Image 1 (cartoon, rainbow, N blue to C red):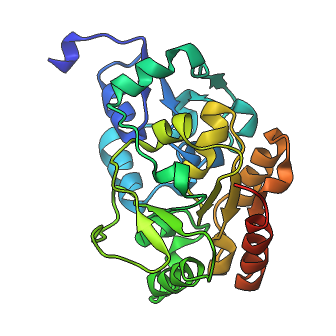
Image 2: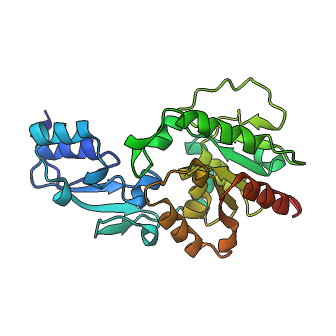
Length: 278
């Protein structure tokens, strides 16, 4: 069945799927399409960043030349790309007059979570952060415990503003658990639709290093404060600082994009933002 089809171009978020399809379509050109921060750091199209199992599967079964395999990559903001791929194609920007259509398409329901709450933490499974590191193999056994300790510290900060905790789809959390200084987002809307409809320049988005923190600017040209926590881990993330530099370069006020160096630095930043009107 697959052999009966002929494709000239194959566009995929997943390199492995693209390689498999091309095995049956020798002349097809492969383009990767944006799938988050890894598309901008160069992690998705880098053979060096692939797992040993992937390389084994590719070498003995797929036998693809990964270095020359990808013809290009589609991104919303090509100027922010920090990888080695030479051909980057710009995706069309979302059109404002279609916002109502997007709301219907993603079944958006209006709620006041982000109207009443200024500070937002974007959750992430801690094991997923390991894959973003320059050298995941050197991760210490207590890595996830350290992540949790940092998270507890930043969410327990005495504040006149409570946090909204936006759970990642892969996080395992009891959403009915009540916390003193934060609430869980239980609306169920797609994050990008919250960015479209609710997030504004006064919001504060906190994350270790989340794709969702980039979404307001990349998709809707909105500029909330963005606070990155990854340096508190004392381990280097792959091309993270280069990408954040690129984000700052397209912000009208680059000072709103902040990399936290210590918990004391975090407390000072939050305290200064709290003084501003929401």
